[in-house]
Image (cartoon, rainbow, N blue to C red):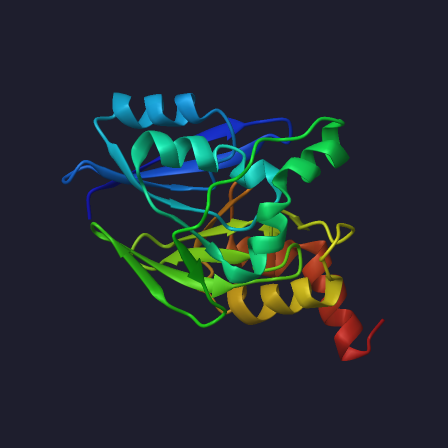
Length: 222
């Protein structure tokens, strides 16, 4: 598989935007169009890639701010989970809440993902959808088995987990998402999250304090 991944850390929340290019076909997809659509487009073009698909893990502003502009510039379809729609449509108001000024509208999705697992085939990639709500409604992680990578969005971080103090978030639901969907993956799987450094499933299984505390809690040892 001839695949290269570019990572841009953008916006006020230092969020990772992933551009995944198939170097043989020159086609690329974007996971989380964070911000600065011209920079995302320029980065792809400098690698000789054409963006043909846009995916979002969830609809918090720092993951979709560039969605409309990037879709308009590339004509690429935009996929997101159906439960993300209320937040997505509320993107201008998210701006008022977090910055005091409205954000631009988000892209209209071309396809709504569901809670059932599916495989998104794109060029040589096969991204398996993992339904991982808790941090946000409709949160999806994308697992590329052949690359041994999971794009975890804001579900799981290195030594941490996604926030659960936001509207629509739920701590227990998030922890069950992590335990049911991410922890069954092999230890060697690289975790490429929405923020902060990369990690592995094995490292988080062994050392993540939130996972260890939750397991103790549900086993009755705390």
